[in-house]
Image (cartoon, rainbow, N blue to C red; front, side, top):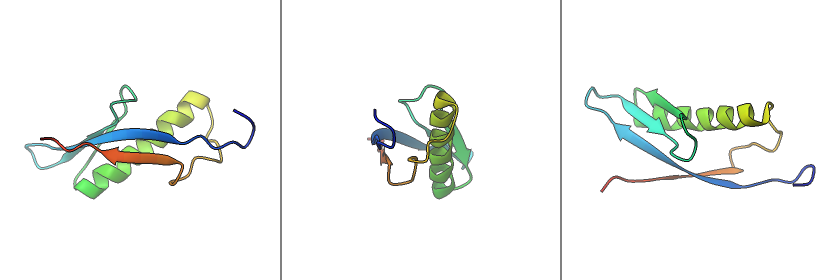
Length: 79
């Protein structure tokens, strides 16, 4: 990719409501990338932050192109 080129990634997330009332969030495409929250929204925000941190660790810096609209999330709903 050329300098300044924006790469759009589409990553799925799963948010699981656990028996103790908290929410666990994971990104299956990124091994070990997970988080927790007291509410559904908190779990969603925290997994988005975890994904950005995971990708930053892979590249050893946070590219300026990583913004909310660059990484697309979709939620998988359990049947």
